[in-house]
Amino acid sequence: MDAHSARSSSPRSIVALLLGVSPLLCGASHQTTNFVVEAPTREVARKVGEHAEECRRTIAKAWLGRELPDWAVPCPVKVKLTGGEAGGLTSFGFDHGHVSDQNMVVEGRLDRILASALPHEVTHTVFAAFFGGPMPRWADEGASLLSEDERERKRHDQIALDLLARRGEIGLGELFRIDEYPKDLMSFYGQGYSISRFLIEIGGRPRFLRFVRDGLESGWDGATLDHYGLADVRELDRAWRSWHRGLLANRNAPPANEAVLAYGEPVDALPSRNPRP
Image (cartoon, rainbow, N blue to C red; front, side, top):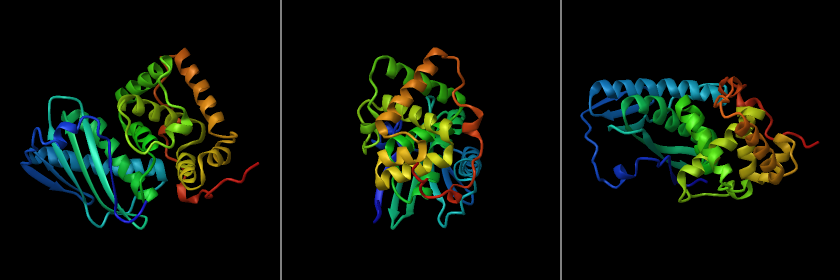
C-alpha cells in the first residue's frame, strides 16, 4: 500500500495515552543515529535510545541477515514511565514502497519497556522497511512478539494453548485476511504469535518473510505450496494444529528453539518464489 498510507501497530496498553487521559511529561531528550527519544529524564532517554539502536541492529540481522542503512530522519520515540506492564504503538506513513515517516510511543516500567515493548516496536520498523508498506496484522504482531523476552513469549504460548483448548481460534484462511484489530485482541496476538512461531520453526525467518510477501501479492494458497510444500492454507491450518497438539502435550517446552533466534541468511539473496514441485 503506497501513497502516504498510515498505519498503527501494537495498541496493547497505550489506549489511555492516546486518549489523552494522562499526558506525557517529557523532561529530557536524547538523540542517537536513528532515534530521538523524549523521556521524563535524560538518563531514561539515553537508555531507551541506546537500547533501540542495539535492537535495530540485532533484529535486522536476525530477520534480514544484515543491518538496515541509517534512516535519513531519526524516528521519534516518546517514553512514558508508569508502574504497570509495558505497551507501545508505532505509526507509519508509506510513499511509493518506502517508509515516509514513523513515530513510536512506549510506556510502562522501564525494565519492561527495555525487555518487551521497545524490541517489539523496533521489529515493526524493520518489517516496514523490508515490505515498504503495511504487513498483515497477524504476521506483523505475531512475529514482533518473538523479539520480546522469554516471559512474554511464554505468556503468549499459553494464550495460544488456551485459545485452541476452548476452540476460540480463527481459521487461518480468515486470519490471513484480517486487516483491522479484532475485539478479542489478546487472542489475536496469541494466535498470530503461534502461527508465526510455527512457520519460523519449520522454515526460518527469510522464508517466512517471502511467504508473507508472496501471500499478499499472489494469494496465500500458492504461497503455502511454494514455501512450505503444503497444498493450500487449509493444509497449513491442519499442520499448525498438529504442531500445537505437540506443545499441549509438553507444556514445559521452551517458547522458541535456538533456530528461531539465530541469524538467517540475507533475505534478499533468496529467490522471490520457490519453484513448485
